[in-house]
Image (cartoon, rainbow, N blue to C red; front, side, top):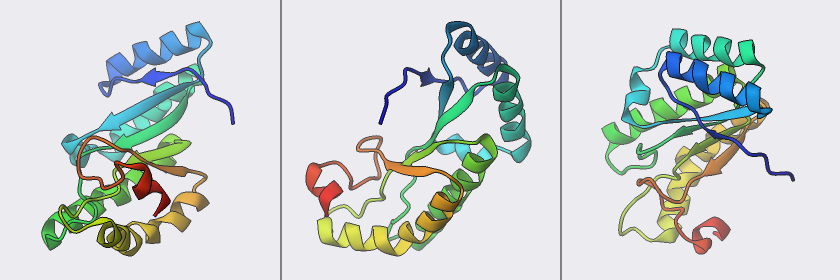
Length: 157
C-alpha cells in the first residue's frame, strides 16, 4: 500500500475549483470531501457539478466522508434518517468516483462493545457488498461522534 499526499477540499463549488486547480498545479491527484449534517441537503446536481470540476483538472475523489450520523441508533427515527444518509453516501461516492467512503460505525452508548458490533452487523454490514461492488473501501473513523470504533478492541471485535 502506498500513501499519497492530499487534502480536504472545500464543499463550495467555486472554492472546490480553486482546490482542484491547486492539486493539478502541484501534481497531486486527489481530494477528500467531508460532510456533516448538511449532507442531507446535497443534491445529485451538486455532486455532478463537483465531479465535473474534478474531471476538468483530472483530480480524483480520494475519499468521501460523512460525520455525525448515528447509523445504529436505538431510536428508530434517528437510525432511519442516518441510514438514509449512509445510502446517499454510497450513491454519491459512486458518482464522485470515491476510492474510500468514511463514516462512523454507529454508537449505542453504554451498551458495550458486543452490542455495538451486533448493531453494526445488523445495520451497516448489509451495505458492504454494494460498497465493494462500487469499487470503494469503507473506512470507519474513530472520532467525530456517533461511533463505537474508538479503540483497538473495537476494530478487532
